[in-house]
Image (cartoon, rainbow, N blue to C red; front, side, top):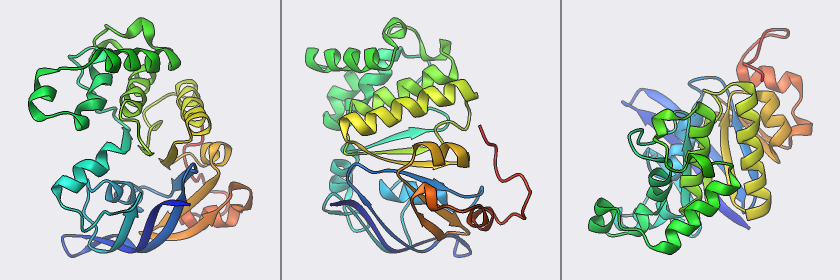
Length: 256
């Protein structure tokens, strides 16, 4: 059953820059999907249209029974509770501790006053520590986030996302700032989360070989248009060159 559907979605910035052009696809619940393409191809815009961080110009987007484009502010707040997001640059509050950042994943479920005052139940705190344990971060729970390595920060971002109890996790270049070893740790964790918790995951990735290794399905996008949508084992080298608009033998991407 589809959890997310794009129907003829376009996004234009400043009436001139066409970030997405007539994009249509569906994602089934439990899928692990990677979106690949060159910088400026529309990958980030596509992801950010899902949770309305970016407003699509035309088309329809449906998530878990919600009409995203036509949803009002109250409905968008409800939708965002179900969608976790992991960012390239972590989006953590560096001066706060790891556990405080993780608990921020519950803010969408609280009143403005409770959130501002940092009121969390014992059950929420226990859940946060359980998630940190699964991600190997128990010993860092009370460290400030600015004391962590990049890989640790990204694991905190994953933990914060899981605190939402999401139906869908969007990952916007989650390993672009990490070394190969840390990248593998992050991708292994997210793969296990997808398999064990049955949470749908959609990634933007530059690393083609990483997408090929971990994904059930790859969507290739060029100049805002989908030029490939299918399993990794059917993604021919010629199609990769078409996606990246490169010639045979050229370096396609930063392969890790």
